[in-house]
Image (cartoon, rainbow, N blue to C red):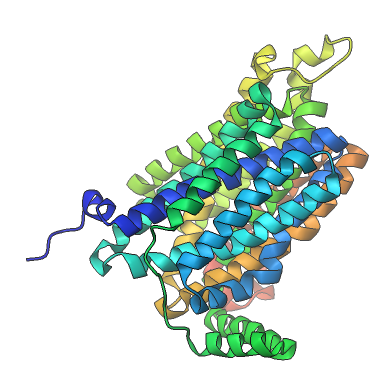
Length: 457
């Protein structure tokens, strides 16, 4: 009788263990860099618009490469892909020590780093089934999921204190050392190859011939195939739009965060680790634990709509938060201070961030579950690949617009306006009859939104 796979048995697989450690080193470095650059660019330029352009450099690789990276990684040994990515990421980090005072150079490096990230994620994820046995797959994926989100929170959480106590160069040096270790660790990987599918063969042939028309055909084919999987499935389409909307809001939050803290709340932007990131992470973890216990008892549509509604309220309250800070009124020359100099305001921001974490997990988990349940296993990868492109693509204009408006009007009014828009979206999900009479919508749409809204049930 075959033994049930355990954490110990999966970690006993040396190939998996090395890949897992590689993921931790890369993700910690990558996330610390993205947070550090957001703070650094704001300090360098004193402009939310400059931060928005940085975010464009972060999102653009997903839009340009997202449809092809999954196909491309199937053509090459994953070991070589991961080694090359680790090596070039390491060089990129160390280069920033000398380029950090040049805004254009920072944008170029950010674009390059995130382009490499587009290849790293599918190479790493697709390598797992080739390294571990099928019964161990669930446990292996659990390891990677846990460390993916933990590294995100830890990377963002550590970057602020590192900058405060050691300077921005320490983030680059520490990340470069981690990535150097990851590169040498990749030498111990086994060869990780898979046979390319039909589209993969077409793509490699087109790349060899530099047939750009054929390359576009492959990308278009992937989009059409995904559209066919989504067509007629309202839950899938709505889940994709919701997930894309969350990504857009996260991008806007990243643009506005340094300006909100430093200019409106007069809290040092590097202290975002304490008052935003850590409470947000605790909210996500707490929400995940709560949903795992009682989530099956809740109606997903209502849960998501209520979470969106509450999220809009939080954004609105964050926008008006400066008026409740007594410290700001008594500062003769308001300057950004450490968060502990303004405990009442910092407590409000931290608690709001915690609640925002609860909101995010209450939106993301049900939406992702609906998406997984309503797409066939064979086409799920394509759906999530296209989802990544849509999420990044829909974020580009709002992120850029938020930076422009924040420089003109300040960050607080943008938070208030965004909160009102999110509130209306949540209200529509909860009470669609307030916006549309029943006769103006098809039966299928009304059924999805809940017939009781129009039939008085």
